[in-house]
Amino acid sequence: MTSATGRSTLVQSYNRLPVSFVRGQGARLWDDQGNEYLDALGGIAVCALGHSHPGVTAAITDQAQTLLHTSNLFAIDNQQQLADKLCGLTGMEAVFFCNSGAEANEAAFKLSRLFAREKNIAHPKVIAFNGSFHGRTMATLSATGNDAVHKGFSPLVDGFVHLPYNDVPSIRKAASEHPDIVAVMVEPILGEGGVVVPDDGYLEAIRDICDDNNWLMIADEIQTGVGRTGHWYASLAAKPDVITSAKALGNGIPIGACLTRGIAATLIKPGHHGTTFGGNPFATRVGLSVLQAMEDENLPARAATAGARLQQKLGETLHNRPEVSEIRGRGMMIGIVLNADCTELVKIGLKNRVVFNVAAGNVVRLLPPYNVSDAEVDEIAQRVADSISELCLNQESITTAENQ
Image (tube, rainbow, N blue to C red; front, side):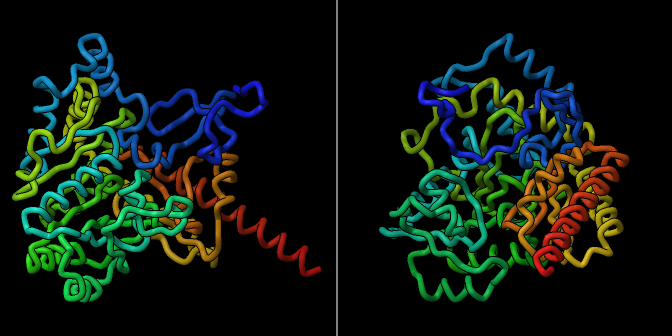
């Protein structure tokens, strides 16, 4: 819709693609023209159960007919049940619920400030990493290690030290140079940064450094969490003090969670933090249905096996493309690294009826639902490979024309 001035009534925050989806079922989407697509993006790691999952649909319908919202002035049974469930699955001890990943990360930063007060540190710092993405609020974009996200929003929130990702010595060096560091926030795999998988033992090394310096370890699992990498949360072996979660936890219904253990579970007192909508009866009922479906269908394990199959099929179909330098990832979080910018590839994918996106300019990012069938995995691999081949042929044609 447009305004009287002829401009759209929507704020122009997005470069939207010329497709409007109106229906989904499992790993498939249909647009308003009736075209069918394979969904290898899942709403950017959100729809881990695919679209119109019957268990989630039943929970939405039942709760909508019962009670949507009361506020956190009152006890909310669904919220308590979801907290119990998450703690049981992870070994964490207490959960704060909110509405998004950015809000979960904001809660984690506030925990780091409260922790600093316990240590009598007046100007605390948190280590974050180059290539990271933590959100769009002022604090989370300040923590994000990407200058493009920062552009136009100075002055940024103070208190972040950015270091190279997957570089343990740089963290030890920072410990000797900054006595006011109180926490490290790390993504187990960089998502927006290009599906960058760190070395084995990287998270455990961060845990050791945090223990040596009495810092909090905060794992940003907004994208990797809730089964995507084949584990409920990718950082659990490193025993972080805080895990932030969102995206797949609601399968499309907005919900965020900040999971805590140890001293981090005791820092927030009444009046320190709050939310109007966070953890309401509706969102937490849906979260419970998502976790129940994942348990019933053993979907974290399915994410691991389906993801391995997808990487194998991509390797088979793309092995002869010199433009593809690497295929990497864990579970249902896969990046295909090209040796040049490939942002135009998304439109070719839509033409070939497969949905994905591009991260870091040159990495095709695939985040399909975990319960995708083997046949759909194979078809996704073929359509993505066909799209990459088409892009490369187009680029070769342009280069040939320019040289004539």
